[in-house]
Length: 384
Image (tube, rainbow, N blue to C red; front, side, top):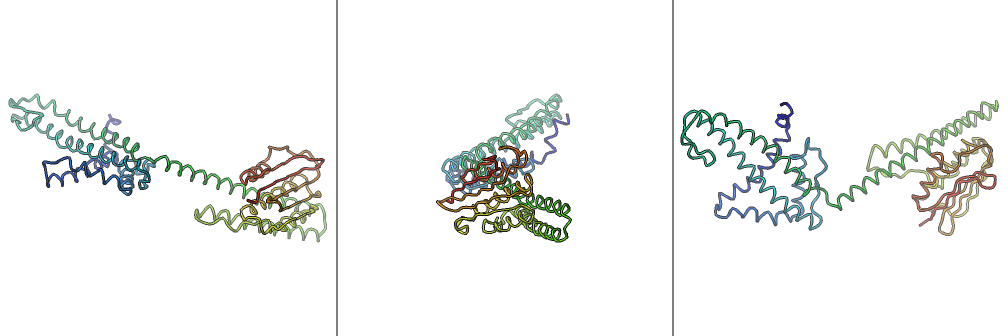
């Protein structure tokens, strides 16, 4: 019984009924003007529905009056873009008008029928009600009193659900709007993945350098080397904090630009950080790095950072050869170091996977793995 009466406790039940009753205000005004032409309101809805902004107004009404808690995203709140959307709006207005007429008739006549049944049960005649013409009153009419009220209850709930289903079909997002929402969602997921790679590369590099420097300083037992190691840890930590603050700023403010990330023109900072950690880095730079497009240069910096981090993490203080080449419409990044221990092969490790993902997103290719006794990371990216 409680479940049966639960719709009476929902505000949506009453807002849906109010939504059905609104068109009858327009119809009622017209009936004061000319009762001989009741079809005029329906005819006027055709040009009205073709106005693009009307679809937005109907979508907003449906979202706040038909959806539960006003939070359903199944209704479009954008103006009509295509003619298909406009004609769907026209059809919706006509159905809403017809449903409103049915709802108003039910709202008026079912309570009147219930009242006349009680009135007849008390000994009065009711000849003016076409649905309950009683010329001979009888107490048994009181037994029929609940049925019109139950029918009213069912009509209130049922018509509300029906008009909501129709609204989802006719006022729902068009294919172009669904595609736009899907593209926006895809952009958000790509941005989250990019931020995850940013944090992995920046923070992972800083922690790797700090661990390697601390271990080398403790093993060396040389105060001068310890001072240099602490300085390198401090510089790397500051850079990581700047990167972390920038990424968190992007997360806090959706409209904040993604600028401020380091580029390949600042690659010397990475090389010096690796050298300070004990690695012997031999770098070869060919071509003008400043001509590399900014997005490509930023991603190239992260690829180089992750490659050097892997050298320090897996191989330690070993000689590393770095080649950065800009020519023939492409950017080449290569980092090689001797194989000193068993290193996970291609396809394992989030760092190597991130390098390959970056290269693929930029239209390039990446090779990672053993090569002639060395571990190699070789990335080629098109400049266009």
